[in-house]
Length: 548
Ligand code: VG1
Ligand code: CO
Image 1 (cartoon, rainbow, N blue to C red):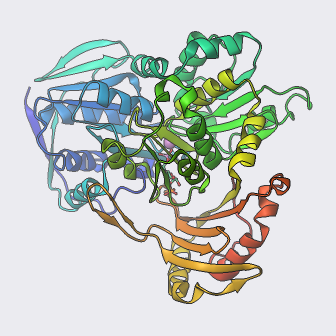
Image 2: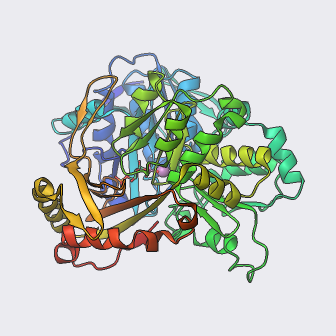
Image 3: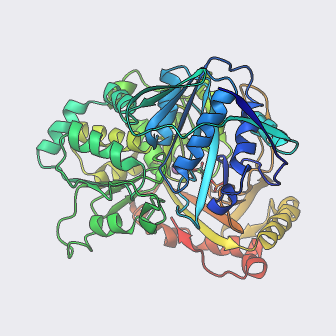
């Protein structure tokens, strides 16, 4: 088959953000747009001829078109094999699992994760390296540099490849292997968790609900939770994946996972007996939200609780080597690490910063406040994994979710935590506010706000302990003497204007004062943040659009 060389010119703005390149579908539909990026990836990842590439996505609008282009380009560029999920489907954690299991050179994941899907919504693509994890910043910067000077790309002019049946198809010199998107991942989960104990728990009448939010975890959850673990049919809600995710916003938080939240807090059933455990995942299956009966577990607490209980789970019976969390994530896990006598690393936002730590054997578990938790079983955060981890703990401990969390607070103290998002803010105003904050950094230490004394304020920078690479400008921190703090950053995953994120945390070790509502407990910090940053003056906003 003849390789066709297409002439092209660069598109501005193809720099990957927190997690790959995310733009409106309409942007990706411009001819050569995706191809320029894919060729830039191929030109940045070293020698791969004859080796394998993994491709799949969350099934959103434009997924299939993008995959067909990638398959033809991979063949023209000399890959020996492409592993693609049936129907073009692979959740982000499943893609990571497949890259590792079949020792692929890397993988391309098509997703804009928690961003809405559909012709007028978002699309995305990211490259994961051979360890199964997101390409580190050095690689994404090389890719970006290539996109700025690209002049041609290679493809094959052939018909689309049928992806609806499992099996192998020859395309020029390259094999296209269409794989079951669920099987390898489900097998990995079964090897780590005590499925027998969870099956028994569920058979004993312990009721659970899982909301796939019309996105990619539907097929995975139906196989694992309903078929393998025997939960009653219907346990998986919104389990049929749709191209537009049912018109929703597939972000598993208290605002967007409304149906599940109503069920778990009793509203849907008129206040009657909600399930004992509820969970949801996002568009591409790497996030998780954990709920108990009328009870919300913050992602930061969830990470700490998984760490504290890890030895109860077969896959972690030997204990943890270390843990890591992103900077804005609460320090709840730090307290567990301290008691376990293991290291705890603080990284910038984004899963790509955990990969080196896991590869070097420095950490086993890691997590982010943004509903992301995971471990070194793969190199991505993993929504269903977190759900199974919780179910395994519940099966062993035979307590309610609420009991496990409140008991954890009595043992370690409670880190009150909340994040406020201001979405769709004018980008220039958001930048101006961040610059203003940067200009205040020097003056803040030593100042008192109410009863809180500022210990330190800075723009977070991280030096990777494995490869020495430095990442600057990762978020403004204001740390107080009493272990409370405020963090400001701009989102790196949005596609419209800017999203300003404010993070609040305070610590309470007095058991009698651990039962407050988080917004109330953090009330003065929320006011301090507004006044220090002049938020309303810069953005015109008084209230956040999402509170988690
Ligand atoms: C957000 C989260 C971050 C997460 C990233 C990708 O990034 O804050 O913790 O790693 O999304 O998650 P940002 O830059 O918008 O704050 V996913 O599930 O969208 O791949
Ligand atoms: Co995601």
